[in-house]
Structure formats: C-alpha cells, structure tokens
Length: 508
Image 1: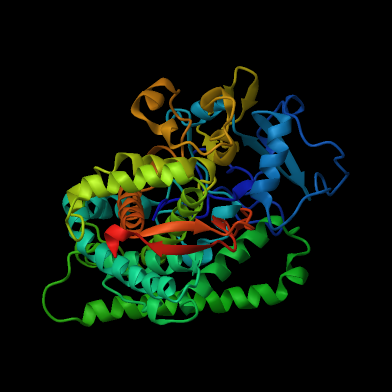
Image 2: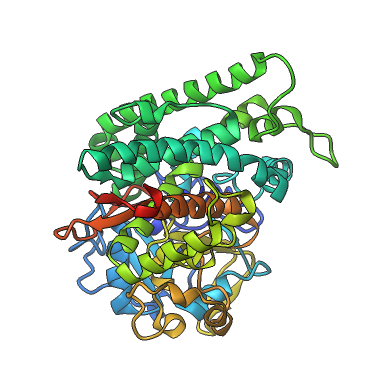
C-alpha cells in the first residue's frame, strides 16, 4: 500500500496541465478530447522561455524525437539529468513543467502556496475510481469525508490488529517459496510480491480472500487492474485527436476491465452486507457503518465502491514494487544482506514469528527499504498546483492553478541532497545522523502534504515484516545475467526479476 493515495501519480510524467483556477480544482473543459481540467503550461507559466526543453523540438509534435511511449518516467529522468532541476517537455500541444531540484521541490511542498494537482495521469483513472481518496479533486467533499472516516483504520491499534492477518498471508508466500527452493527452481519476485500484497490488503481491509497463491496465473482482478493502469498510461502519451483510432481496441478492453473491477468490488460489499452478526472492524466496516464524527454524514454506496477499488489497487500495486526492488538490491549487495539478516536474527530471537512491536525494531532493514524507495519510488512523481500567483526559485512565475510535476526519481538522486554518488545503493543514507543532516522535502516516496499516502504506516509495516521473514528464512542469489529493467504502468516495477533461494541453516 506504499502510496495508498499515490498509485498513479507515478508517471504523470506525460500527463496534462493544471486546473482552470485554484478555487475550482476540477477546472473547466479544456482542449478538445482532453480530460476536464487540462491546462497546458504556457497558459500558467509566463516565462517558459527561462525553462529549458530538449533540443530538436519540432513544430506541432514537440519533443518526441527519441521518446519511448513505454518508459516516460525513465525518458524524463534522462532528459532532466541533462537539462537541470526544472525543465519542460512538449508533445502534441501538451506542455509540461517538471521539477526535481531539492530547493524547488521544497517550495512546491509548501501547503500555503501549493496543493495536490489532479492531472491526466490521475484523471484517466476517474472513470473507475471517481472521487476516491486518490483521484478526488481538492474541492470534492467526499475526499475529506472519507479521509476522516478511514484515518482511524490506520491507527496503532488498528495496525496491531492487522498484524496476524499479514503473517498468515506471508506464510502462504513462504510455503510457495519453500517448494520452489526444494525443487531448485527460481522464484518470480514481482509476481509473488503482487500476490502477497493483494491478499494482504484484501484480507486486512475487506475480509476477502482472492486465493492468489492457489492460482498458476494472476487473479483476474490483477489482470483487469494492470489493464486499467496501462490504458491510463497510454492515454497520457497518445495524441488526443488520434486516440479514437489508435486506442479503439484498448478502449473496449478497458471498459471490460473496469466492469470486472466494479463487479468484483460489488460482490465483496454485498457479501459483507449479507453477513450475519457483528462486523470485522476493518476498513470496509468503517465505510459501511461509521458516520463522520462531526457531521454524521456517511459514505454513499457509489463512493464506497470507489474507495474499495482505490484501496485494493493502490494498496497492493506500489508495495509489491517496493518489496521487489528491495529484494533485487539485497540480492546484489552481500554485505547489506548479511547485516540485515543479522539484525533480524538478533531482534526476533527464538520467536517463531515476530510480534507487532518487534517489526519496528528492524531499523537497519527499514533503511534498506527506504534506500530502495529512494532509488525507485514506485509512485515516482506527484503534481502540485499553485493556490495563488507565485514565483518559485525566485525566477519562475506561475499563475494560480498552474502546476508542475515533481519527479521523485530525480529528486531522490539530486547530488545537492544525496552526495556525489546518488546512483549507488547505500542504506546508511538513512542512518539518523544522515537524515538529520539533509534538507527537508528531499525524500518523497509517499507524496506530500494533506493528500499524501493515508496508508503509509500500513505499507511500511507490511513491507518490513515481509522482508524480515524472508531474510530470516532464505539466502538470496541473483541471476548473474540479469540487469535491472524497470517496467512502467503508472507505477514502477522490476521486470523479469527472478531469484534463487537457499534455506538458511538457522531456518531449516
């Protein structure tokens, strides 16, 4: 759930521009064929001439030479590294301002000047997620209502209640990995992490079991989810005028995928409503039974569906990526792996499984997770819009409603914040003294401000618990021929990552 509220801010690297005005974040109808609220950068950034763009810009089509529609995040990382901490890209009339410098990102994190911007990367998901926590516009009342009702579902007491269910799902994973290890076969890391995180959020949040580990192929919910995310990604990079032609088949598939997601969630909700006796006290019970403490308002049936879809998708898609990247780096860093394993052995002792309180004591392992999220934040960008006319960096004026995309993958690599070798994997960057020495707002894997990830602590507990269980049980062996490839489907995930395992003597 790393980024319960951020799943598809990720590659807004190709999304559209700001709202029609700060008072109306939904905006008004924009250019033909573009989602409501589109506003290209030239309408809100009076001095675009001060912001560099890639060379070889072409009339009408913009900065498309050398671009890869499948990897817009990584394209923007490459371009931004050469152009500097603020730059712009244009394609088919869509001009976008990107920011990755630490000082500029800190300004955009100022809640008195900027707020979350819901642009194309998010707006493309509104047909299925509507005004759910992640996709709601700032002025839509259901965001605050749902946030206030659901926030107690991530309290310490609630988290402690989820811990046994997390352990139960982790046992399914280790049973699967034990069988693969005994047979001398590698494990599919992203595939198995997706199964784990889907089952975890489904069971802890909604009392539902998808049976992912009994399946040889991904659950249809995952297939439909990947389809909707991939379609939203494609909508970002296809010229609007050509979309009806180029995306005709994809649009039909997306409609089928959305219908399946809706049916699945409707069945889960109907089963809970029909269940006898008291509820389970989970997120779904809160949605169905809890009124706002001040106003007495309740979530509507339609909004409950949207919230459940948001949690199921966002609650597993990014955490599975975070776990996969962490396992990749651990398998390539023998000294880090040994140090993390030693910590798990020392902290958890002879206990068969850790108690809730023991997970937070794995401080070095948490550094490993944070360093993996630094290098590859699975939701790798977030957009911010100006609440009023302002200037950033003392140089770049932006009008109210204008927006910029903070590219976290480069912010997390800014040498001004992270030193001369920011591409290196080094968990000690997150030692307490190193954290205190860094500027604020340079590590943003969960977004920023009031609209940051509501499930951050859930995600971190789940990921640290699972990594601890796996490191206690196995040694990890990388495929020597593998080179990290990052797949983009609005979130980031290692592609084709497999590992060999051997059972540790202490865990045999």
